[in-house]
Every structure is written in C-alpha cells, then in structure tokens.
Image (cartoon, rainbow, N blue to C red):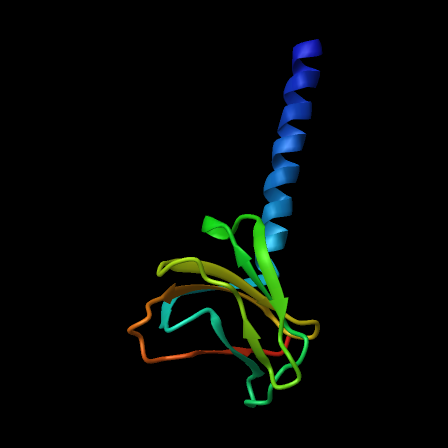
Length: 123
C-alpha cells in the first residue's frame, strides 16, 4: 500500500514538472536560425520597425539555461552585452506586450551584420 502511494506521488511530481516546462515553453518562441553578427550589440524593434525602449535582453547559459548577464534597451532601442569570445550565445529577448524570443547569435569579428531583432506583438 505504501509503495502505491509513493509511486503515485512520484508520478504526480513528474507530471507537474513536465506540464510546468511545457507551459513555460509556450510563452517563448524559439528561433532556430543562428544569426551571424559582429558583436553582442544591436537594436530591438516592433514588427513595424519602431524602436522598443526598456526591452530586456538576457544572455543565457547553453541550451537556454540560467541567466548569465542581462541588459535593457535605451530610448533608441539599442543594447550592448559584453562578449568574452567569438562563439555562439543564447539570448532571451522580452518586453511586456510582446512575444518573448529565444535566439542564438554567433559572434564573429569578420561578420558584416549587426543584430536587429523584431519582436512580434503578443495576442
């Protein structure tokens, strides 16, 4: 009898964790493309091309783990995060009233592009 209770409790906890993770994933849009850019700086805009002030940009550990560093956009929608080397960085970009994006950015000093992210309005 006690084994059945323990099994049900473990099953409940496991299902709760799975459902919680699915709920979190539904609130974020993962962009599969890796953006090749010159640096971890750029601008955040809405889909109309208007600059977004106070958008939050978080550098995450690999596979969208914990937040390592974060910053906010200025009044012109621009931001800068420190980069430690030329590599792929995982970023979360969010602002209230807009969809949250998870993107990967490959920093390469020879790249010609700067990062411009357009956040879609949330429904």
